[in-house]
Image 1 (cartoon, helix red, strand yellow):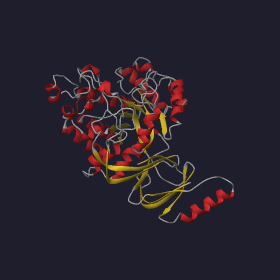
Image 2 (tube, rainbow, N blue to C red):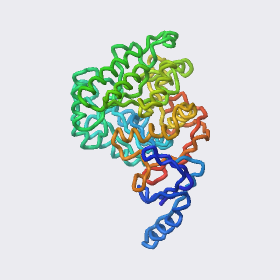
Image 3 (cartoon, one colour):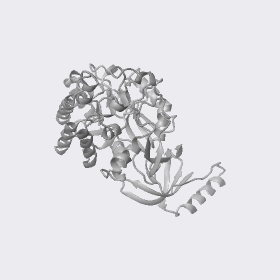
Image 4 (cartoon, one colour):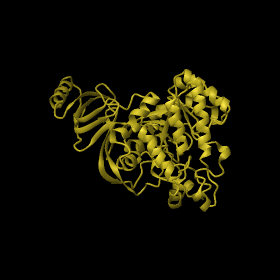
Length: 437
């Protein structure tokens, strides 16, 4: 048993915001009450367990000065497993997630083999169940992520796929996309989309603009994203499908989604911490550590993303945690792979760039990092109530910490070495402490 005392619970899903204690018995929340009100109940429960001959103990966590929130939920992570485990594996990815306050993550399917078969998904979920956090899998939209033939969605749903995506590759065939949306809509599943038309892109990972020109590169123009966002909103509107625009990067895309939502289109969007924290100028300072797809763009784009988070156009913050080896990232900029890690710094950057600038309140940030993704993807997560999952993050929003060593296998991030606000004190998943800071 576990009792958490003297903390401030913030649960956007239920509107709870106040000082409470939480009693956890097993994997669920047993009771909640005002501070100090659960001591006798915890002692009585322990006495009953001991009288029954069960070996147990009561662990107490003093959360004075801390916020207790639903465990964070990330609908977009790359654990590189199977196939690329020199970058990351399910176990190390889960450790990095727990350090960042995440209790639920959805793994993307650009693995080898891909997440296009029941066997691959079943194996990944089996190994994920041993990590201590809730590890979910996507199913790919197309076989081998080749954009030619749709997967057997029913078979993948049957073994636990919670959403469908070919993340890393856009679905360029509009007819195929329409058929995929129709199938997913009939099954009540979301399709999550990497929106970059490769026909526009000469050098991926860097915005087509002044910085790219200074580096002798053509880069990736904003129209590559805008054109596909526009197309897929039309398809979603036509089919009634529910879609997610991943890692949004351009101001025009935010506006397209805002207008579509006003018309009732079932479109959601996610923003990454790096897209609301950095601009293309970061490439000059950090090189390939600031190279990603879609790329960092202009300050006006960054501010449009923040405004989208503020007004609810963008409902989710997702890390797009994308580990790469040091050797890969040390290649020349044109050849280095795109992507950065993000699980360990996501909450901190949200506090720094969104809360401290008064763009979002703490409850609004938690909603975008926990409550909303859980709701959109249909996960039993993102809320705190009696009988609910004992998945929690306890953090000190004002306390600074230094990000000097990663629990991921990779450390391809420009935020390594920085001091950031928002110290994670404990991450609790299924009633057990899986990280303690």
